[in-house]
View (cartoon, each protein chain N blue to C red):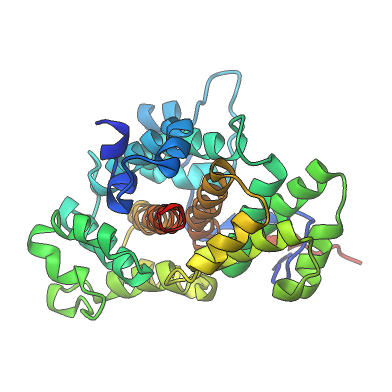
Length: 195
Length: 159
């Protein structure tokens, strides 16, 4: 038996789709190509198989995702993860928050920031720079967008460059996208350990 | 299409100055964002959602998200479906109330989406592939409107 996870955690749950993923055995050539399935690579997650229902979107999304989160220059990878976490907490995407809190902790070699965020939420005790980043990410993620010129000024006061601010906008906005797939199309679940 | 003609930079009014310089360093991302727009708003395989309907839903989401500059660009492409670009319209007149209600909730109250929201769409006859297409449309627009909103704030601070 598995149960749905409702609390923020760094321990990454399993993602269980609410729709039926594409079956590799009956996938179209376009789907196989978008999934990068080859005879030596047939391992594809249920998440990616679910998105393969819309091949055109899947094909453009992966390179965009990688560029925003991993391209050199601009904001540090850990701070981009903080943008992703801010969005995922607003949208309550437990799965995304877990994956990116885990990455943040590994990049920083420290769990203090994500422990604080998951325990205290908006009231987390953060450094001024992390505070400015998290608050901006949180407010940009609200619907309608709630970030203000004052929030932008706070980012600059905290020392962020134009390039870093743009990367924060992109990583936060990207999770506005990812959350609306992960949290909408599936459940984060954990296997029950039987006694 | 040149960098500053991409929808996000054009809608935010970025042409020159420090924000434009920063955007130049991420030109690949701005171009990939435009490619994603093409894939989501005007795909080859439309499924249950015509290009007009997709543009109308994108306009609606951008408007509700607080980015009228982006909404106006999509509204101009919405054809017969333009009425749905107004967040006050329910979609009942078009027989699309369930689609519109789901798009609004997924876009604007994401955290409240539950398994029943998906099973309701399935019960209304929407296939799984179309459910994924609808989610990608909503999700991409949620992304793009936040890129534009953020760029506008950057531009305001640079002025």
